Length: 196
Image (tube, rainbow, N blue to C red; front, side):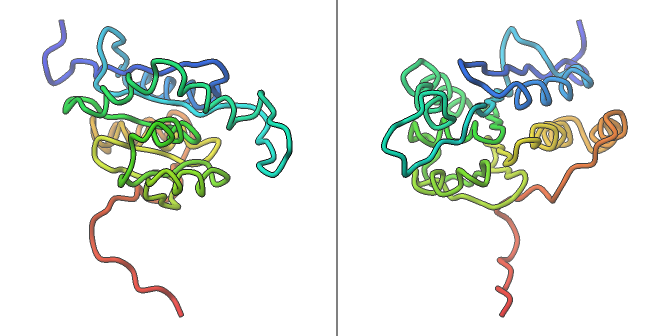
């Protein structure tokens, strides 16, 4: 049995009908590379976005295969109560990839919190009462979100940096031949003066 310093950090990756495989597999690969996966319990819960047509919000008919329809269907499952429990647990960090942040937001769980999603969903995220931040990765304490189709690698490596350290995060970047984009946004420091 590993000691407390080397024990795996338990990670669960949520899968639902219509989830985006890239949003789930990219974090899985990162966490597997540093042996963070321990599915018996979870300190980190990863919620992927959905894959499908974007859909036309002005259309007369609603495409049941569209990403908004897939995400809306998750609200009719036990997933919102599971995510509420994860957010209520002081030992758990919720990590949402791309459109995955819209699931807890639409369930009313992110009101007043800072988060990001795919750029096409930022208005919806903001409409839920979530403070939508246009950044690649947003760290709001026990909620870490990422925006963009390929942002699963960025957010997972940021989680590794936070929980394991920058040396391991850098080693993962080298192993994957991948450099994270942008800085991790946190609600700290002064607010920049707007350019005129």
